[in-house]
Image (cartoon, rainbow, N blue to C red; front, side, top):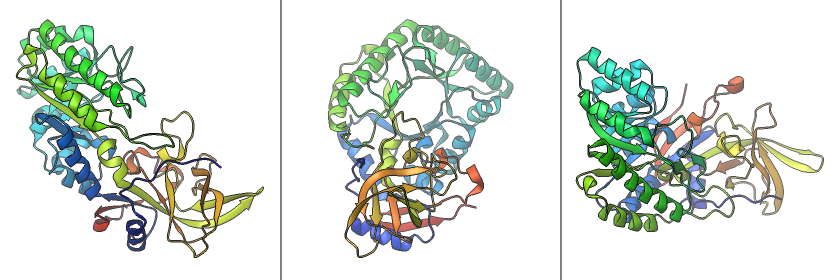
Amino acid sequence: MKPMGAIPADWTAAKLAVLAATIGETPAFVYDLAIVRARVARFRVAMPEQLQLHYAIKANPYAPLLLEIAKIVDGFDVASGGEMEMALAAGVTPSHISIAGPGKRDAELAAAIEAGITINLESEGEADRALAQAGRLGTRPRVAVRVNPDFEIKGSGMRMGGGAKPFGVDAARVPALVRRLVEAGADWRGFHIFAGSQALDAGAIITAERETVALAAQLAEAAGHAPRLVNLGGGFGIPYFPGEVPLDIEAVGSALAETIESRHEILADSRFAIELGRWLVGEAGVYFTRIIDRKESHGEIFLVVDGGLHHQLAASGNFGTVVRRNYPVAIVGGSADSSEEIASIVGCLCTPLDRLADKIMMPRADVGDVVAIFMAGAYGATASPQAFLGHPAPNEILADGGILMRYLTQP
């Protein structure tokens, strides 16, 4: 038997039963807006009042969800021209959108410049191309510089800073680039400094944020220009696996308030922002899939479901994890049999990689029962190889407190 992560407290058995009975066809993702609102409210209470909250669309770009999130955050951070269009379609003011990511195409740079969106420049070459596009359009571009810091968030699941990285401009080269941008007439907005993601250690985040504010001051002094905005990145993680403990954001917020209060005078008029994705929406999503076969092989029980890694790649252990561990899983409803068994939940794809739960203890389940896979609100449908083997796309559904709001069947 292998352990699994803890089911988020917001997902009660009663709520799951109601949704399983009303969602219609599976596989289906359900995103509960009430959980997202609660996360935003908790952030507002915990963090310094002047800190802006931005949503990183890459975590979950489901259009109805974006429309609702746009009402309760201060801005959107996007990573492509497609996400830029999604943010605009959600009604976000262009000046409240920033675009990051290495390898932006000239067409994406031009579209951002025309719309008045801030471009987080990832290199001197990208800066040259952005200035050239602005000159061609006869428009003053809004630009910031993404910094590759010399530090990282210790223990982060994905390290975005420290050492050689494809992201951002090495800190030592940033002041010269800022001066060049200002001299070229660009509307320089500030810094984007992102050291890592999926961190659960409050102390590590506190240290990284303190170092980030100090670095922003050093770079501003060296450049001779104060930033209007310092984007501190994000990195707030959520507990997917056994033994992981939720991040203490109250401790993070208290320390950040002290850091901002004691900041260098060159940042006196600067604003600060944090961009979050999975921390806002990850625990708000559940992937529902139905058992279509029950089989035994060499004494092991396999429950074959109508979904799989083509929808929820991360739960299969094939999305950035080194050692495969079990996401939290539950059988919803099911038969009257109260006995338990050790079983593996596998998807419908012809690959041994398609395993959504590996040898977990669970109530005995049978064909027709619904399986709920949690932590599915971030990096789910759009971070999975949906075209693999030609199976249908999943449904996506927005709920509010367990009550369905919108229903969208993907083509």
